[in-house]
Length: 440
Ligand SMILES: Cc1cc2nc3c(=O)[nH]c(=O)nc-3n(C[C@H](O)[C@H](O)[C@H](O)COP(=O)(O)OP(=O)(O)OC[C@H]3O[C@@H](n4cnc5c(N)ncnc54)[C@H](O)[C@@H]3O)c2cc1C
Image (tube, rainbow, N blue to C red; front, side, top):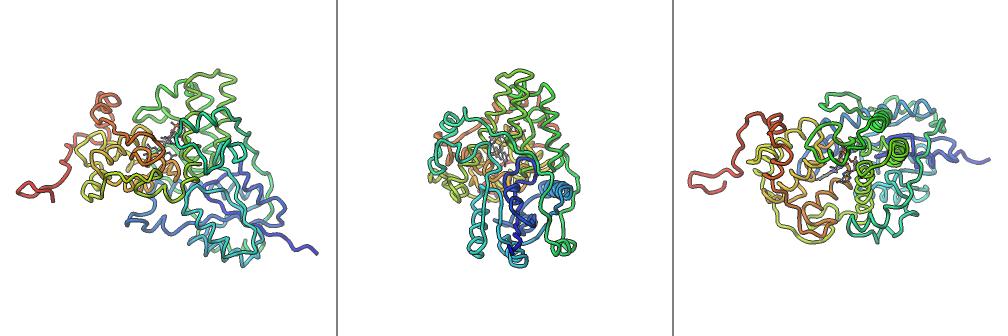
């Protein structure tokens, strides 16, 4: 008699049922399925350089996303097991306890996540491990180059992939194989993320909230003016705000392109509607770029292996992070980030340029601060964009230096944005000095 096949599906940044090829592959041919999400200790505890892993708004959004995922899974005969600990040990225990034959997950662009996968594989040589691409627009088969030969800049990448067809999103499953009965008992005693909301933004995690935003955005005329307004410092509808749900995988990029195509067919295409695709290509580029470069994405000299200037100045960094620099525009941006967990693309560029150029701080401290606070934190886009601005990434220019006065005059000419986040606060000098005017 054939032994029943038990498969473990490891949910990561693919917290959805629609267009989830990895989940469907896990279900295929399995008699029972274990759906797991692992909360890693560093997220709630202290991570690199003593920072906490993720600020409240990020944790809350994740909690909402997982609660919604658990509900969706129940509707198709499954349940979500949330575990706490290092993936190698927590998943290892489940693999052994339930004699798991196959482990499936989505490809993760971060090198840390890849190392965890490799370690798990080496600890369980008799188990089959399979990964699928669920975060990208294109498949590896579609790309006209191997990942190792990815074009070094976005422009070259876009020229080669811009005309490729985007595959249609796959429908969500209506039924999944059940979990093993012993698992149902086990999961009753497990801690699960609590969905709460105290956020200052009108966004909630979860697949159905993501799909609602896509539907409402494309049923409005906003795509026709996207390019003109996307550089604004703030304003909810001045950009799509898809990033929150893309980051957790509540939303498939292919579903967005499909909705965009339908919008253009019925309402007409223009430069602005094309620009939404253009920006999603930036995301796509950074996804493959992260896979290509592995841990170099986090190294000081970047993928170019070009050592930049910049060091760690604790006082300057604290002032930047809290919004107490001599630059009112940067202060407003950093206060918005702390209060909401989101800042616009323009704001990200300005604050990153200030950290690298005016404050001469090692860019990685800025990237790590964004990682902690951005609800839409995405390893590939965040570290890729930071390297780009610091002049050590996918760019031919040495580094990008934004003129803060010009940016303020162009994007906040009446001081409305600064006033909103900083009130009448007078900016502080950059460095503390002693009585003889020496930097402390
Ligand atoms: C220093 C820095 C750090 C960043 N960190 C992140 C991050 O952690 N997570 C993240 O999703 N984006 C990051 N970005 C990119 C960009 O700022 C955000 O994707 C965008 O602001 C999200 O808002 P939106 O969805 O309304 O974007 P829209 O303008 O509506 O763009 C649509 C989508 O295109 C993609 N996109 C747009 N611009 C970029 C870009 N420059 N790089 C990659 N993808 C892009 C996003 O998926 C976005 O949701 C960063 C940019 C900079 C300069």
